[in-house]
Image 1: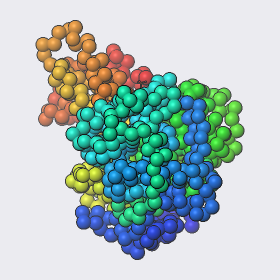
Image 2: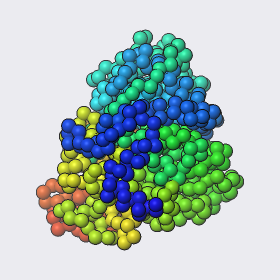
Image 3: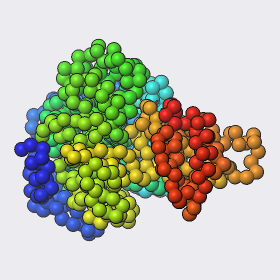
Image 4: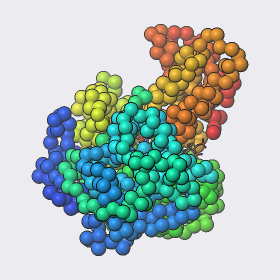
Length: 638
Ligand code: COA
Ligand code: AMP
């Protein structure tokens, strides 16, 4: 069957379509019901099925004779280490660590927060939770203590897994003190903290370990009995992953076990054209959804080898790093963010480093996290001379919504487009009244319900937020928060967010949260944060502040740098708030709404129409002059 036939079948008879995909998995109890409604009235997949995701990812493959095959290749460009984990070794370590968690009283349904760098223990920790039916919540290592504390309070874990430190280029980032601070800031009390002591720089156990609370990972693991897989219901949560929304409070996206396993297993072949035994590399971070789905679960569910890369596209040691990994580990498919390739392009535009490597095993490159800008698409395509596939993703869906499904039918790619809807996703474009828009007309991108397996059924502790944020605006449709259009050939063009979310170097942040932090500064009367274009990171935030009256000129000069430091301290350096400008006033509508969209257009040097509702059109000229004076616009580069 070609793509169109499969796609149509998935929409016309979703139950039959997904039943067929579900049959590929070794369930403990095969589901009889494919699609049903839960108590909240939400569509759920495989509600009477039972399984264990860790079993499917590890033990099952050993039973099938893949015990000696590499499950994970840990390649640390940051530290120089390369370590191979066969399925057997990974299963044994996971089972043993699950035993350690069990000894700390972790059981089905308990939450475990994971704050780890890109080391094998991150994978071991996640799978050990899955083995016990516990719910992991991985927090990206670049987040500051306050962000971790907010997640502790929402997920209420009894246990945190962390490491002594992470490595960012030449910087050693001490993780344990961040966790200590987060535990102090949180209201919820954490009972245990398991610390993986990396070689070289260890947290001194006597001085920095809190007796009774903190445990040494290696000792704990070595002294425990292996734990077996626990059978869970398909709808039981596997993990919570927090993501940014329009408010300061992060949203805990819940992923269930059954739909997730079916969708990811299916996607490995259907989207990425990867077969068991082949090498897949998602150059992302386990702290993001791409890392969850395609460093850990997808490749392992499909019996592939996954590369766990602790390094950067550049300066570890150079812009040939990605190509070195592809050659050395015979990577068939690479998946990363456009920003990573822009970073490589910046340092090796002519591909001199690229030419030094044998990439004969590489068959395609997939990009996501932000729209792939056509110049980067063309550059990468010319370099690789292999399919470059931009595909569209969200934490909420857990896998691609639009893609070129290379394992079904390799169709032509179009620069600037995330290609075609993925099977199961009925993508439509609506106007603000909910009317379906014809081809080539931009509007809100929505997905008609039911969402396919793998998509989130709720937000942790916040079903009301789930309804309001995603389901209320257009009844019967999931609101993606992205805007764009579908062309005459059915290709989806995702042009940007329609809300306050921005993507900085493929990382999602809320400008609303940044505004809350800026507004907490004692000298700030009012502020706005907008995402402006950046050559490397796609977008970066720009803060505009109005100061309170009566502040001395000496103090005024210091405010922007204090705000930059505050954002770093409260969110993390990775949010990249580096530009803060003092303004006399902000352009507003007569009813007092800040004209953020117009501000963005001015900053990006785009044409705009002065809104008829504007309070004073002269405010736009002031802003324009300020941006020019501060080189904000296409010239803003980090
Ligand atoms: N832990 C702690 N700090 C982190 C971090 C982590 N995991 N990741 C980033 N940071 C810090 C960096 O050290 C830096 O801090 P500094 O201001 O003290 O130097 C800051 O956050 C900004 O980081 P970043 O935006 O990543 O800039 P960079 O110069 O370090 O690297 C790129 C630039 C483009 C190489 C890098 O952003 C990159 O590889 N991006 C790809 C992103 C990606 O794969 N996203 C996944 C989506 S699929
Ligand atoms: P996250 O949940 O962090 O994965 O971020 C999801 C958001 O990233 C989406 O809602 C989009 O705004 C953006 N995004 C991801 N992939 C793409 C893509 N291929 N094209 C356009 N935008 C994308």
